Image 1 (cartoon, one colour):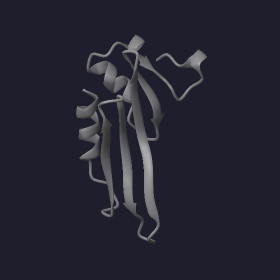
Image 2 (spheres, helix red, strand yellow; image 1 turned 30 degrees about the vertical axis):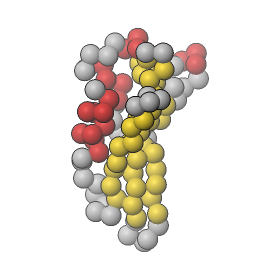
Image 3 (cartoon, helix red, strand yellow; image 1 turned 180 degrees about the vertical axis):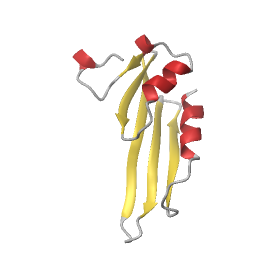
Length: 97
């Protein structure tokens, strides 16, 4: 499910034709990442992780989200209970969705 969501977003063309969004999946350790990579028009390198999820003890942890994607809602709408989605980018006391 995470790979499907990430693949859909990776296939959305960037406004800059020299930048691509790629998926990085580590199935052994349950790490999932969307990465923007390429060059600006002024020849500056772009290499930015924009979305990172981990699966830790059966829960989906949103570790980073630098997109306009509401990934928590997207996961929830695909059947993952909100109680199994953790906002890892927040301190532990405010991390549940």
